[in-house]
Each structure stands twice: as structure tokens, then as C-alpha cells.
Length: 482
Image (cartoon, rainbow, N blue to C red):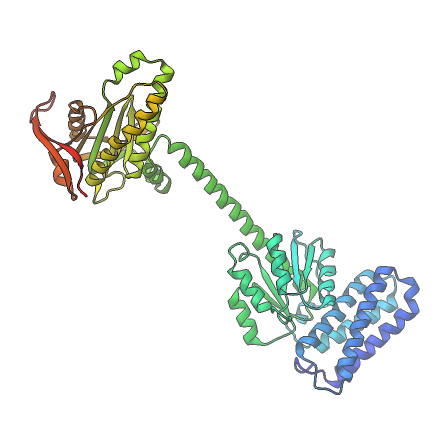
């Protein structure tokens, strides 16, 4: 054809003459053919009849889309028959070859016919699950026959809604998509596939009789992986399906690897989160250098808390009761400290050492530490209610807070280390905690002056403690102002 919209008399006569020759030979040699070949000949001759009606019609010239669909059907069934018949019936094989040359000349697209080069190529690929979408039944059957012979599993859809329903139910490797369909057309189907988070990686090959360049560009920009013209070259189709399956397999493997990494990270966070704070685990996972020994200077607010008279209590209780009492207390305190974004450094028996300001520093570290201490003391009523119900003694805690500069980082050896804190402020906090009474919160002068919020402050006093030359000014925190 000199254009995609009309067939010159020369090619139309050659096509119709070739079809008539094949029809005559089929009628004469029908008994030598099997049932499958007979069905293929029936489809081929039906396509020829449709083509003749188009060309004989006195109405306007057939559309490119309709003409390409007919030529695709004729070419497809002719190629399959030629492959099946081979050298069994040379006369019929020669007639089919002449018909294919006539179709090739009638198509006159150049783009795909140039890929023939006389000898067909055998393209082998990993079997895939293919969805072929076309409103014409003969096109769906033809593609299914082509690809099934190569080991692919092919499902078909007669329209856009049916195609999307299939994608909802099945993991598809490649979609072969016709553009011009009633109802939801191919462009809308393409758009929905590429917008869907689970389908967007599925390769889509558009197969259309339309050779409109603007339409081709629109499809590629919308996410189509390839574009073939009808009647398509089966070798070229196989090559592009092979490439599409390989892309999908790579994506599936990458997705499985990503999911495995996510599962591993969740396991690591869940496991090590029982021994380290979430922020430390995150720091280690996201920064490889987070495992290196060493640290840096940080301004932090340190919290120390323990149960008053715990040694005496534990002597009167059974080991199992001590564990129950401790786990209830430490579990509740851990949740409160983590809710206030504190870093739990360690549990030392009944004592808790936590820090606000490392590894992540925030402007309100001191305020969060004081609010955390108030919440911990408030939670003791509920803990003691459970203890009473189980016949366990009530407990009281003292909490000390101090603000200062410490070295924060990985301390230990290459074989065993921990994220910890070193510096004089740690000792000061311990000494303040020694003088706290049950239910009391004492803060150092440095912590009080670091607060940006307002709190109810009780008595203040200077204390002298063992191991520290200068006196320490401490303040009693009674509550937070509204």
C-alpha cells in the first residue's frame, strides 16, 4: 500500500489472487490436512473474505485499523500453516509463501517487514504469563496460538475492564494491548496500569494498526514499553516479549530482595530494640560508621532512678516474685522513657540509667527529661495497684536528673561494645540519686537552668557528697505548671 489508508489496485489484486489460489488448493487437499490445520485454514479464508468485502465496498476506504487487523489475521494464520505444513505439501506451502509476500507488500510499512530478511529466526525465552487485550476474537486467538507454541501461558481479554479485572487476580509478566477498543480504550488501560503501584512495573507492548506518530509518542510517554504495528512480525514480537519477561523477572527479584531486607531490618529492630533504644538501633542500621568505637562531646540530661529499699524487699520475696515485680516496674518505666524520646543506657538491677540528648539532640531535652520523671512517678500508683492484687509489696522510687557535657558513643572493644556515656556529670547524677527519697524528683542546678518550661519547684539545698569536692545545689520538682 502506498499509504496506511488505501490499497492500490496492484497489491489488492495480488492479495486476492493469492487468497483465491490458497482457497482452491485447500479445497482440493483438505483430506490430507489434520483438524487443527483445517481450523487455521478456515480462519485464514474468513480473513480473506473480510478483506474482499472491504476492497469491493463502494463506501469510503476502510480505516487503517480495520485493514491492519485483517492483514494481521491473514499473515498470522498463513505463517502458522506454513510452519505446520512445511515440506509435507510443497504445492500448498509455495502458495502460502506467495500469499505472505503479497501481505508484506500490501502492508508496505517497512518497519517490521525489514526484520524478516528472508529466513525466520527462532527466539527462545523463559516462559511467561501473557495477557493479550484485543476486542477482535480472531486477533486474540491468533496471538494466543503464536505464543502458546513458544511455551507461554496466554490469557485474553476482550476489553479494558476485563483486562484490569485479570490484572487484579493474576500476576502478569507482559501485557499485549490493542489501542482502539469500544468502551475503555487501550490508552485508558495503559494509564491505569502505569498508575497502579502493583502493576506499574508490568511491561506493556502496544499492538495497533494505527501508525499515527503522535499516538505512538503519547503511548511511550504514558509508559508503554514498546509499540508494534499490525500485522506484526512474529519474530519481532517474540524478541520484545522476551525482553519484557526479562525486565519483569528482574523487577520481581529486586522486589523480593527489598522485601527480604525489610523483613531482616524489622527482625533486627525488634530483637536489638530490646537491648538498645530505637534511636541507637536506627543509628547503627543507617550509618555503618555507627559501629565504630569512639564518641563525641554531647550536652545531655541524665536520669537515674531506682527503687527505694529494694535490697531489703528482695530478701523477703521468692526469686520469681522479685522477677515479676521488677519486670512490671521496668516495663512501665521503659514505655514512659521511650514515649519521651529518652535513650535507655542500661538497667542495673532495679536502677534505670537514661539519657536525653544522645544520640539525637533536641532543644527540649531537659524539659522532656523532667516531664518523663513526673510521668514515671505518676505511674507508680498503677504499678502498686497490680502489686497489691498479687500480694506483692508496694514500691517507691527516687529519680535524679543532671545536665552536663559527656562523651557519648561506642565504648568497649572490637569484640564487644555498647553505646554509653562517660564523664563527670554521670557521677554527679549518681550522687544526687543516692539522696532522693521515695516518690521524689531531684534535679541539679544545671538542669533547672536548662528548662524552657515552668515547673513547680519545692525546696532547694546544697549538698556535699563523697568523691566530689564542690557542693551540689539540688532542687525538688513537684510538678509541671499548666
